[in-house]
Image (cartoon, rainbow, N blue to C red; front, side, top):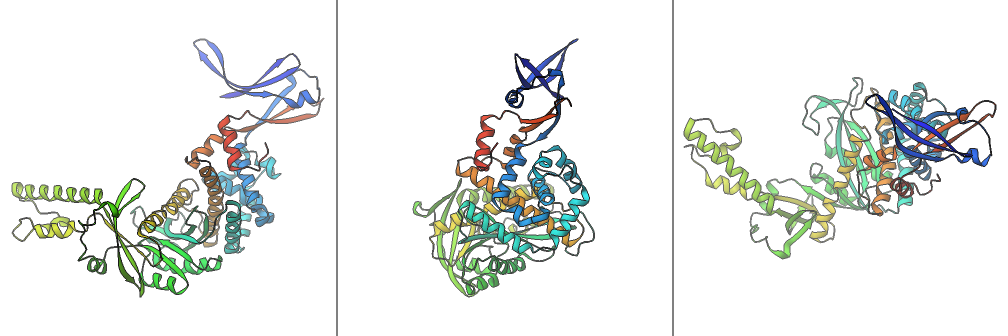
Length: 501
């Protein structure tokens, strides 16, 4: 357990954080870090005995003061008004990995937020009352204001957007939004709700969230999202979305409202017919190569139509994946054949189509299956090149990172609130927290720093404020922030440039 040691040299007092370690029968003191010279006592020329200096509470300071500075830049205090302190307590706690409202009350007192907000305590009923008040406010108006401030602060435009939907499970039992189903991890019979998220294509700035019943299809979520984009003031541009959402209706509606689509297309009968005469082996030429990250694609655009909208189908062939899938299939077929010959075992159901009625290998079935190995498809009606379409489509991974961030650091799931209104406020709080972390991520990225944002904030956790007092005869108290490392100083300057330490 570390503690603060007072060191007096001549007329100056130095402070250091130390801890005791037992070495056999002796106790030796290990220096952790110097806290530096106490400027207050020197400036006021106060004479006192060192034993009169009392060390008060030590509060987590670095991450909360950085988040508070960013929240002021984004106008959160004006936006939330009289409930700013309790709601931002929850928002900051989400960013720094808390677990529940009850935990937020305890966590609040370990940080310097009482000094920052001016409230020494943050009772649970204050937090719940703030949540109740926020549930009665216009969530769309709040999200729109935050989005506009983010674009102004970070220099983003909304000419291209990405949309996706995910589900998350509830811990409560009273929500009408909850419906049993299979979640994204494949777990069945969980009570789920659907959450849709729209972000900008370039920087991944969150635009809006919306929540619906757990059994609603992604396509229906997407149709509602189009209206939501309109309400946010985004009426046209390029919409990027995953193949789980793609439908003829979605593409048609987007086209009629002035949007262009860039969508993943699952393989179906129409796709198979369109590429029936395509020379897939002939695609593998140098001029058709598109490098996306660590993956090499051979790309071929062909004319195609979805929902009455004319555009192009971009056929992407991943040759490495093609070889791996084919090799793995052949190994399973050979293993099944050998076991059939030796033991007369039944053929696994997934491999039955690769065997004839006489239990011999059906080579034609293997050839048909191999034709589609390593293939994926994108449809777009925008006037962009095939290479640009590939890069833009895979840039949608930014929304997957947003969802991953929400489900890990921001504790989007499981949702522990029971009532629908409280669930929606929980998602809104996650949205505000995502906006803060997105600001940090983009500012760090512009400086060439791409580290995990959660780990970066953990390194700021060792910045704390120490409170001191001198006995009552002097009636003096003061505080001091411990000495920052160069890394911490640089990070704070980047993510919260208006912060004055």
